Amino acid sequence: MHHSHMFLGEFKHNIDNKGRVAIPVKFRTKLEGGAILTRGLDHCLFLLPQREWDALVEKLMRLPIAQAGSRAFVRLMLSGASDVEFDVQGRVLVPEHLRTYAHLTKRVTVTGLYNRIELWDDGEWRKYKTKTEQESDEIAEKLGELGI
Image (cartoon, rainbow, N blue to C red; front, side):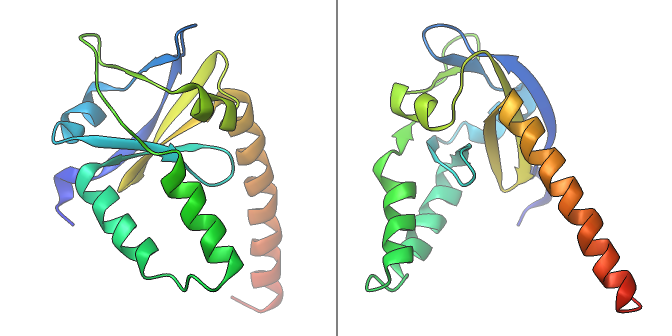
């Protein structure tokens, strides 16, 4: 992957009562060729450049449709997806069903995760981070027991 296409950093933005949230300029410039907003995992939203979305859809289409788990995942990712358009202030309109899914109310954390951007309700993001930090301590402990 081309180095300049990486998304890195964490930003806090407000979401207005119409459901619009600003996307940082450094992320926006990488989304000019089109972008898709969809349900992500752990009740966040994924914001993907068009080419990353196309690659994801291709992978999803290869999942064994007979497995309930992969069917559910495909539905989660595809059914709520919407094309993203930026207004003059660099905001995207988050459709109501996606706002509901991610519990977006006031403060939104916009975070870059290499090939995608995630949008989180700020409270949910803090809870998630606390939980994973606790789990990483446990992981470190287990590795310590293994002498790693």
